[in-house]
Structures are given as C-alpha cells and as structure tokens.
Length: 159
Image (tube, rainbow, N blue to C red; front, side, top):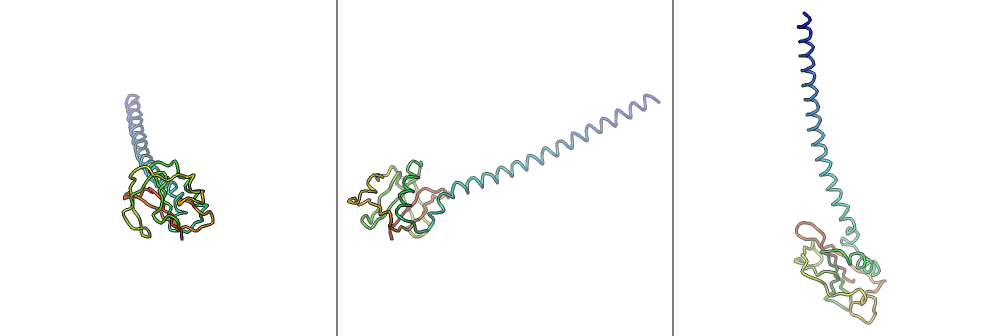
C-alpha cells in the first residue's frame, strides 16, 4: 500500500510538472507575440517622430529667417537637399544635395538625390547675391519625399 501511495504521489507530481511546463510555454509564446507587437508599434512611432521635424514645412508659408534656420538645421543631413527660389533667382539654388523632382512644385512631389548641391550658406545673407534670402520675406514651403515616403528635401519658393 505504501508503494501504491508513493506511485500516486509520483504520478501526481509528474502531471503537475507537465502542467507547469505547459503553462510556462503558453505564457512565453503570448509574451513573445506581445513583444513583437510592441516592437512594431515602437517602430511606427519612431518613424512618425523622425518625420515631425518636416511637418512644419508641409505646404505652409514661412519667413525668410525660418528658411535660413532650415538651411542651417539640415545642412549636414545625409541624402537631403533644400532648394530656395527667390525673387532674384527664379531657377532656385540647391543646398547640401540636389534632389531630382519628378512632379511639379505645388503637388505631392517625389524626388531622388542626384548629387552635391552648389549652394553656399554664406551667399544667402549677401544682399548683392542672387541667392540672398530676405529674413522678412515670405516663402511657400513644400516637403519632397521619395517613392518610399522618406523625406528627401524641402523647397522654399518666395511669394
């Protein structure tokens, strides 16, 4: 009888261990799925936050001093260009990188980087230069993205 009782205790312990292992595996799988969802959400949030620095320029009117600030702010950004079209320079000048714009300005513009830009920040404050940006002037801003939705540039056109 003592052997039967020991066997029952051992069997009960065995089933208890199997039940605990099963519960642990189920919890691990659930936690793994929750972690994967959290990582995807975090990635989406990170992408949105990285794009927010450009939303202030999305089809808005900004001052010339804001244009100058944008030129300085994005001057060292890789794969990014800024074009400024002024009343003196109707063709415009690219700074940092040149973006090939495939859709006319005023609509949703898509572009790709084609090379280094010739524009120099020093000429933007020289009133005798065609690249002069009047700090109190008004500029229509537009964001340029590539086909995958990554922001590649900004265009400022004086109004």
